[in-house]
Length: 520
Image (cartoon, rainbow, N blue to C red; front, side):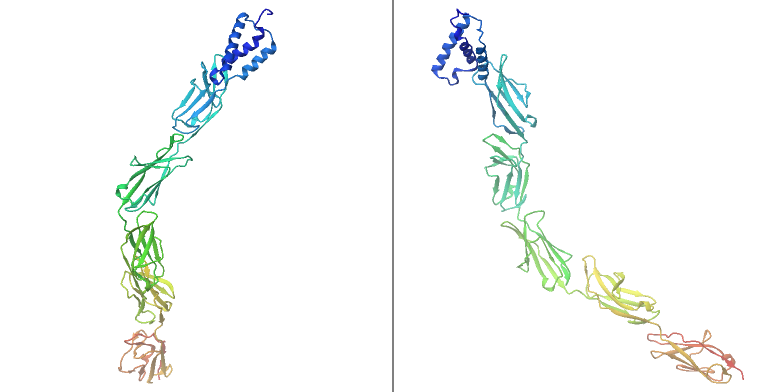
């Protein structure tokens, strides 16, 4: 070893050998440095050829290992077009070891080896599963470079725009329509519009597509898509939205329950523009504007002043519909029925009473009756309420009301009519002289009826009618029955009752008097 003239160059020769492997003269070294390296390289090879045995200088060996690590290359990992991509995009990763040759590239994703060994790794039609952290490492022979920087690939579902339409999907000739392409993803987007799935308009960075004064030729299916030019990518195509352009609409005006109403009723007018949105309704009454702008106009407790001709018109933005049809509201004073009573308001037990609810207004009426202001009976369409064989329990105040079900309305409540049910007039029978009497005497029976006049008196003995006029032994003078020359056969039970042509046409039966006749 002492005869080796190149031994002092051994450490330097080893160092130059390492530099040859991990450095390239084209990497920016000066011409002088390149020449110096070439000279050292030639000298080192000659020295090594003279003596293949490396001198044993431990400190030099350590220095060589340290320099080996110091010059270990580190690849650079780049991503195109960008590391944040959408599903379906194509992304390319490039692993650059410089201008060194003979390297094999090894890829890892989330520390898991990938199969490719090319310097570029292209992922076509990216999926969610492609998201992760990528690195690469170079190998030449048994030698490995350091790991590259990490590239984190983020995969997002490709956004799908939503098309908005203002004022509505159904519009009318002359209106202005604004279509909006809403992309729920940040970025600098360029918007393209399609009509019937053919490109119709490119709006640039404006997400709105404005169509002034539309006509039926603008009807169709509109969709949109966004693109980004800085990092070439695009959204999905939006769902199509159908735009329908029709001629100017004419609202339909309806009225409930009916156009002919009574004072106090509630009437509702409805202005229908169809299943369209965004309209403001303007009302007119006899050409005068009304305050409400709702689609329905309700008039509660109608008055005479509410009578008139009504119509409506719809407005959307600066666009007006045609005027609706006209509805004429007719207001009539709510009718008030009158209760009639037959035969009279004062009746007698056993009589038949008929109450009549008279409504002076045409219509199909249902009648309800009230006794003492509580509902007592519903007569349906019959305006009469018949009470056969009344008794005092039927006494009370009767009133009625009419309702119409087809066009819900009702009359006022009638005034109450007082029905009084009484017993027939009482009859009282007296006898002169008092019983018993003796044969041959004259007996007077008198029938007194407490009320009314023009009575015809009926006389009864036991169960048979006695007489109604003068006969042998009997004399009838209005309310008095006279028996002259009483005989034993005149003995018996007597009573009387009154009859007349007017009401009451009968009295009650009188009390019974038993006439006893004694012989001489």
